[in-house]
Figure 1 (cartoon, rainbow over the protein chains, first blue to last red):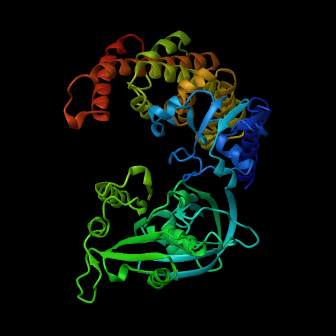
Figure 2 (figure 1 turned 30 degrees about the vertical axis):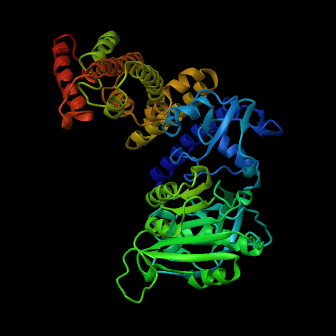
Figure 3 (figure 1 turned 45 degrees about the vertical axis):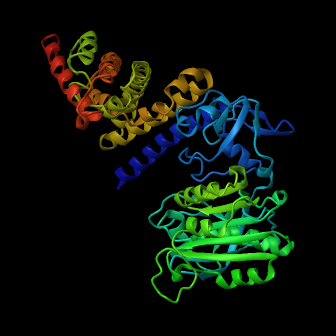
Length: 363
Length: 196
C-alpha cells in the first residue's frame, strides 16, 4: 500500500515539475506580449501574441470559415496576410495554389501571430457571429432528408438569401472530435430569430449526428452567415434555378425573398430527383407558383417507372435544353453536387448564358 | 558498471551499434524524412541534439529519482515524459530565437518525441549501467550514427528517384531493402570495436 502511495506521489511531483517548467517557459519564452492586428487597413485590435491567427480572430469575435476546427486539414480558413505572417509553413502548402502564394494567402489556423500583423478579410465576415440555438422543429421530409428549425432566442441573424451557416456537431460515440459542417439556410431573411436547414443523411460525421443523435429541444451551436452564393439584385432578366436533394434549401430562401419583396422576374426551378419519393416541400413550391410574379417548378425524375408521373423524365440538363431558349438574358443559380453542377453549367453555356451570370454552390 | 573507454563507446555507437542498422530503432522518421538530403541533415542534427540532452536529463532522473524511490517499473513512462517535455521546451526556444531552423524542421520537430531511438538510448543507458561520461559519449555517438544513417539513405534515395524501380517496390519497400543491405555493410565495421 505504501509503495502505491509513494509511487503516485513521486510520479505526480515529477509530472508537476515538468508541467511547471513548461508553463514558465510558455509565460516567458512563448510570451510575445501584446501585438497589433490590423484588418483591412482600417480596424486595429490589440491582441495577445503567440496564438494562431484563427484563434486570435475568434477571440475578437471574428469568425473565419473553418470546417476542421484549426487542424490544418480542410483548407477553408484562408486569409490574406500583408505583413508580419512569417514564412509559409509546410503544413499550409498542400492547400495553397501558386497564385495564392504570390498573393500572400495563408491558412489562418497555421499562421501564428508573433508580431504586428496586417491582414485582409472580406467585409462580410465582420457580420459572422456564433449563435447558441435550440432545435425547435424537426421533420422527416423524405427517407434521407430532414427539415430542421433552430431557434436563436433573443439573437438576430442578418444574411443574404442563398448564404450558408456552419453547424457544430459535438463529439459523440464513434466521433471523438467536434466538427463544423456547412449547410445553406432554407428560411426567409426576414425570419431573423431562427434558421431553417435541410440536412440529408450521407453517413458523414455531422449528418449522422443530426439524423441519429439530435432531438427536438437540443442545444446546437451555429455560426455564420458565409458564402458568395446569394441572390443578385441588379442582374435583371429571368432566372433559372437548378438543384437536387438538399440543394433546394438556398433556392427556397431566394424564392421566399422574391415573394416577400414582390420581385417581378420570371423564374424557372429545375429540380432533379430519382423518383416521386424523393420530392419534398411540393406544397410550398406550388404556393410559390401561385404567389410569385411568374414562377414554374419543373421536377425532373431520372428513375421513376410509375405511369402516374406526368412531369419531366430524365436528367436536368435535358429539361433545361427543352425549356430554355437562346438569346434571353437569363441568370442562373445552381446548388448541388459537383458532377451535377458541371453538367448543368455545360447545358447553360450551350444556351449562350455567360459564365459570369451562372452562380453556383457545389457541395 | 562496465569499464569501457567512453571513446570506444562513442565510435561503437556510430558504427558497430548504430541505432538504425544494428538496433532498427527510429525507423519511422528514418523512412519518412529520408527523401532529400537537406531535410535529412536538419532532422539528423535535431535528433542528435534532443538525444544528447534528454539522455543526460534521463541519467539524472534515473539515478537520483527512479532508483532511490524504487520506481524502475515506471522507467519507460518517466523517460517518455521527460523526452516529451524537453521537445516541447526546445520547440518554444527554437520558435522564439532560431525561427529559421524552426520553420525548416516544421512538423518533424514534435515528431522527435515519438522517435524510439531516443527512448532506446535512455533504456540502453540503464541496462548497460553506463556512468555519466559514458552516457554522454554514448548518447552523442548514437545521435551522430542516426544522423549519418539518414543522410546516407537520403543520398541514395535522391539518386534512386530518377531510376525506374518496379512499381510494387517504389517508396517504402525499396527503402527497407536498402536499409537491410546497408545494415549488412555496417557489419563490416563489427571487427573494429564491440560494446553490449
